[in-house]
Image (cartoon, rainbow, N blue to C red):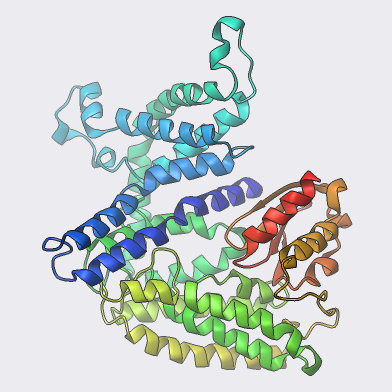
Length: 480
């Protein structure tokens, strides 16, 4: 079950990765016309409408992304089937259709069906489509029906399956909807404290990958909070909308880079040069883009106490920002790019106070990390007795990623042990026959920030933002 949920979390990252495009379009459009949102300017209207087209169709993108990511071959027919499933469910469960089926007035239909076009239904549609692809993509039909064999049968089977799923949702969805609304409302009614609890659990769930599922409740229109969509569309309450995003900026832009500085200063003298490049690159990525996994995985498992401190500080940061009604938003993550684009949006409220908060959190992170590392002699990067020198490589060499991929692949056991290779934004996600055959030290010697062993057959290698290049090289090795 854990493996399945982790695959789902990874699949959700594909549609989420589209959000930066929406953020850029909306951000630039609003900078051009910050008063009327394009009502008096064609270019601003063009850009903001394009951005809204992405934000407004995120649920459908979830259906496509989950279907693609959860299918065994990641084939385009699975993605098409996800969209088919989405169309069937949202049409059969629309307010008008439900009113027709029940023979009642539209006004009497449960409000749950008025919110049927949401991320939850999109994810279900994607999961059904992926299951149909995995089951029927290789099926062979009699000659008379041969045209519909294999992958062509998947959209058909998805549509048929979604008839049954929609029938179940006809009775189940109102109950689920009310439960989700109660859950989200319970957090939202806690105000700043609720935002703090969300920030804590958002970080603490990172090792499992389940933080993506939690994000759906608060960031998207699953229970009506839709913090990201409402913030970027300007539909919300100034100082409130964005409270589940704003507190991440001080942590990702300032706190974690300061933690990198603390780890560098506490590294052994002879190893500072070795870890400097890693920590500098990871800190810069966190500040600019909000991608923090390379930093977090560098201490998550070797110093879990630090990770607990980090999760607590993240919760405090969200609570503080919400308490003072300082808001800013992001389309991808809480880095400088998103901060710059969102700072002039109509629902941004004293966003530059988040910079002041960030500078304070930088000091807190640095002091706490340095004290805890030294006091408890934690084996953060550059302090472990088993740390070996990185494999020699030129950072400007054309085969840098090929050499890294080769060492990682051989450390995993090569063709005899590696069963599957995949990747998300920062991690290689791999399945192996025998975890005992994995040479973790050889993998670590490539300079990767961390390794996460999920179970007896699944392992993740945290590479960083260049993971796609390394993953492509690993796939090439598997083909040869």
